[in-house]
View: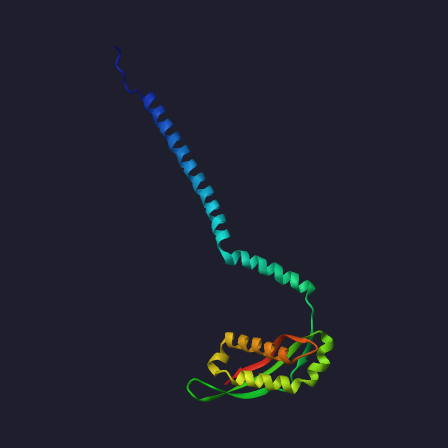
Length: 171
């Protein structure tokens, strides 16, 4: 019976085979990771509510701008300088000047007649807040929403669409 010996040819072929098998396995592993990563990213993107919402909001804003009615801008007169309280019981001042966007534009005539009434509403809304609340962005947004809501309650021939602060200073 002949004895088997490991000749250099057999060892070299065996090493090449092992290298090829390891290379193919490694390539398959990398491809699996890449495909799995892509699937996972797609899945996570669908789970993120902000990603879908942001796309939809951009579409809605773009669609609104095409069809949205633009109103007339009406200044509510000279600037207001108001006393507001602080949590430390010190008196602070707020200086503001604002304009409102009125729709439809033909409702501006009624709005011009009601400027003193609108200014009174603004004074009551702002002085009911503390300086700490007013100084925050959320406080300004809250004031803006309140003004729109309250003015629209008394406005009969149109509505206020937006409030613009031309000047807003807290001291």
